[in-house]
Length: 267
Ligand code: SF4
Image (tube, rainbow, N blue to C red; front, side):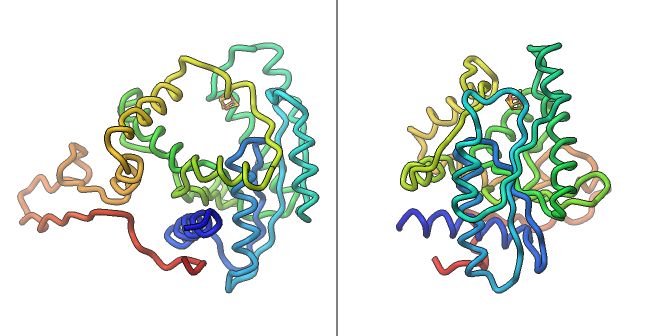
């Protein structure tokens, strides 16, 4: 199957399943400078042309002082394909970097979130799209299970606290081989963040382990993704979801493979 079909089928599957995009939406695409978010922007533009509903797209990038090269190269590419691109320097993040160079992801993402809402509001957007991929969902699930004692990953769709923005992750079913191949095929500029070079992190360790397991067990990530949509509460230990009073048990159902869902494109 060609790359465009694969990408659009997977993005369409995520959008349709989680009702991410609705008629009249204005979507602000968070472009990080990496391969995933520019691929998402391209996919949304292609789907916009085919979708039976109308929605508009703009893009933005938050400068937190961590890019390894000027991110304007990515912005120029975005403008060259006819999309409005906003480059926002977040001064509180720059101060944080100066004062606490070893700050963790929690603090960094809190600062970024505040900036993102401010930008999206200025752009008149009601939806913010983030470029997390299936690999991010798998890594996040395993990291939370092993390091925080929670069975949780990332939300494919959620809302900001004040409910003024719908937050979506249209690459939920797209893996990083696809985004890598897409940017290579299109010759898109990529400006990495300094954090991407960090070694020995928990995130990187989990990704390497998944890749190693997948050499032995093909489709491992796909199975993890399927499992996240196929929860058997009765076989877990959260008493909020258990029938502790002995009501007759629901017959066990086993679902295999990826869900087939109506999608926005013809695969
Ligand atoms: S990986 Fe780097 S850029 Fe990303 S949240 Fe953590 S500190 Fe911030």
